[in-house]
Image (tube, rainbow over all chains, first blue to last red; front, side):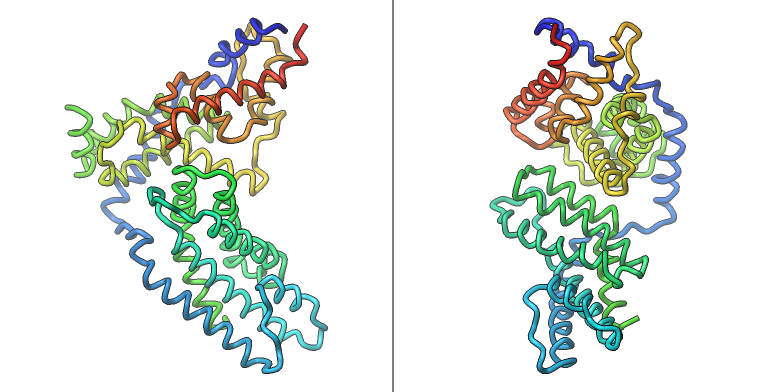
Length: 215
Length: 175
């Protein structure tokens, strides 16, 4: 194939690549009308996640503090692990005789992790914000990503709700970690939309409360 | 009734205004969604999701850009999120499936068609979207730049890189 033929191929793409069928306009409109116009009259709309931010920031800080406090209170001689992932790895290798302590360790680390994830998402700037320290966010997201994956493979993820949340957080953290490599305005938009679509903040809040109460 | 008036009436809950705006934009939204996803069911879901999200956020539309630009920005975002979710849950269309759903014109060389489908699927997300929008759906670089929120030069360089990769992949067909 010569260059001319290649150009012909490219110019023929509109007819040869994923040529769309006629759109099912009425069928799609029925769904849109039902979900927007009918739902609008019966369902109160959620306020934006930004309005939750100050409350969640305070909660996240509190949770991290309590998590560290619990850890210290449980074993005065224990050293504080440098990262959540270290603690999870340590807990995973614990002998059978101290299973309950292992469960507590998982819960504490999960609580700490959830607080850190909430703090990161809250501090994430809006898409239009200038002068962003993307590397800082991306680095933190990468660290939390390691912990996320360790938790997903740990007994902590046996709770289906928590597992679902971890999976969604994994996706969000991957997106944030990628900011270091390539960033444009739509990347941050996508992250905020993923968080919003998955209702991640309210699930995160709920998980923090549940985990903190030891349920 | 112009678009601004339609939008005001939709915000007030007017279904007929909603349908009018939908009829104007849905065909192109669906077309772009289908080209990007390669699947009729997915394109239907993306189109529905796009309009539901657009209608629910109409009060945030300030008219800085054309409504179509704003709408197509949502399409790209919905498709990208959907593809990332599919990748995560292993629902990504396989290359063979991508080939089978890439409907070809009757005169197309089937091997070449397969090669093109695979090659486009292999492109990075940014390159693939730019190539499909420009070379297939006919968007201008200015439109792509505004929709994707990148400089026009970035759109041009992404297209150039995407074409270069296609040329490389299709080199086997050189005589």
